[in-house]
Length: 238
Image: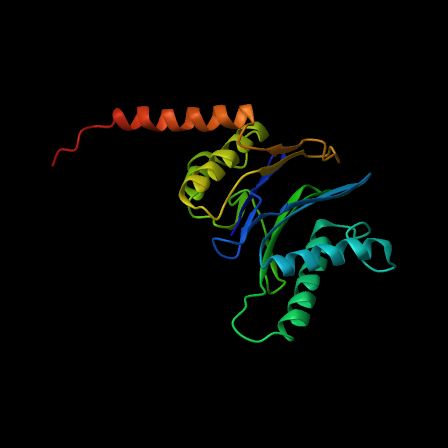
């Protein structure tokens, strides 16, 4: 399983992903789920969840085609076109691999695509296994894929379109920490990225381990804060 969250805000886009995959208790491994495609006029960030073979094939084809004379992530003119391109590649891989296999294997994958191409605003898309996609809006400024239910309540209580990038990253990390505590299929290390709009730079990338001082301080403060607030709740009185 996995958990990825991305947030499109007035100031830019925030991304955070765990790195655990598993196919049973004795098949646990670490695979990076946050991938950056960058050049002078664009920054595209992909986060993946679902069938690992499918997501790796999709990412491999996207990278291979950058060097070919065909539409690719480095020459499309908008993030919308990039989302459509990724959707087509997802369909291609699932049709290829799904047609060769028997049984009840789920070949699906979900991908979050965010970032900016020069001449367009910063955007965020959720691309589904069928290849279709939706875009984040001011009313719905974030997407989650994977094991999302444990981390959703904190985001819904804190985040809005005008939240600062720093606060949004704190929110994303607490959301993932809540998921880590409740589901063993999500695990450290985490990969995080802050993209300020119009910067065309992916320099603010972070690898967060169990020893990362800010993450340790954040999860401790959040846990202690919850305990304190809970102890101050009005007594149960019917």
